[in-house]
Amino acid sequence: MFEQQATINFEEVFSIQNILLYLLAVNAFGFFIMWLDKRKAKKGSWRIPEKTLFIVTALGGGIGTIVGMYTFRHKTQKLNFVIGFPFITILEIIGIIWFFLAK
Image (cartoon, rainbow, N blue to C red; front, side, top):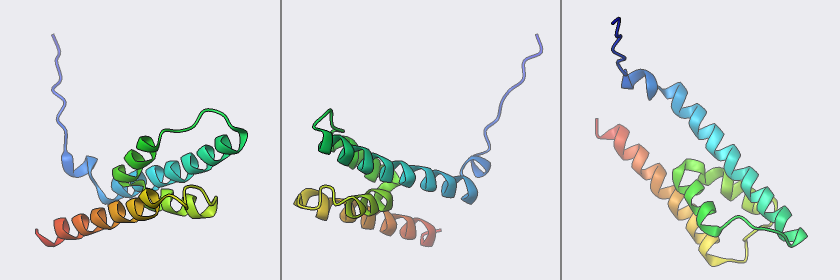
């Protein structure tokens, strides 16, 4: 009867403030899961799959996972992580720079 059409304003959703909040949250989560996985490794219990760690890195949490990796000395002997996390993060930074300069 009284239908309201919801319109999505992408400029508001993808504002700089919202993007920064997202990056802060995903990096804090990346740091947290590195701590959690290290803790679980010490106890010999269930572990977070390596694929999940890479997914969080690829979703923008590279700085958090890298800082967590070296803070907790976790996965630092695995070349996939020592090279993979920074590689993904650098590609994302280059992509962001290209996106903003291409406008």
